[in-house]
Image 1 (cartoon, rainbow, N blue to C red):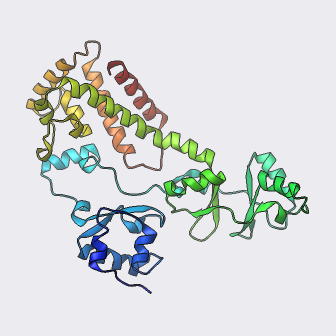
Image 2 (image 1 turned 45 degrees about the horizontal axis):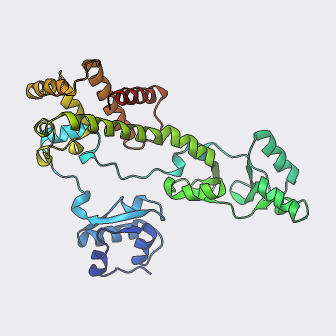
Image 3 (image 1 turned 30 degrees about the horizontal axis):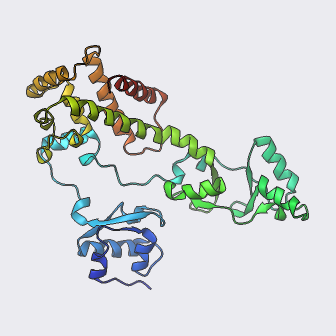
Length: 344
């Protein structure tokens, strides 16, 4: 039966991380439906609180941070700041608050080869040998999962000298998740078992995600994050060492003119060096900034063009799009990072 915690109890949560399941438990429920989500959202709002990310969009095992409500609303900016935020792709340099789902992996939707519970053990092992599988699900009908045959479970059957039957050669409680499960919350399970069966909302098994799939996807999707991070680190290192605080303030937002290179948004790096930008005052300062770098072997026009390309690619990957970057875009990042390494 649902109930509403006291205002004092809710205020105690401010600034804390709490699993979604515990937040629901505070309101006497274990499920999220229209009624419970509306109740929790409104009750938190009444005491000036909200969560990041929004608790209704997360896995039950995911952690959310309870924060002041005003911190998750979009602040009002003037036109120039809005345009800069749009160019940077992220407001105030923060990452979006949506989650990456296990269903975003192609393997979760690639289908699954299986055997029925009436099959012989050799039928399952033959399929594993032919397809080079490490496991084969045992499924009756469309969605009745009986277990999973693995090489380990087959070996265990022989070690125990049990009858050679599919029931003795399979794991009866294999790891499963629905397609909307939070990817990062499920990583420990994939690491422990080596695989994870994925169901759609109707209960049908739609695919198997293995540790190899995670490794491949990590390289394709997460690798650009680390490359862009190193690019920004090296940009800050060289620009921060060469430029005066006043030069840096010229490209910072009016409400954050600290003169620190760490407070410059990515679009600001371009403005610091672009000799063809529309603002004449910034063009003149950019000329001075480029001279301060003393990169005599670098072609300024090409460097700024590549830097702006990195900015655009960064905006693409900052939302952790399920579709990985193309090889061409990855190569652009790799080339620009290699160039920066020559100067920093």
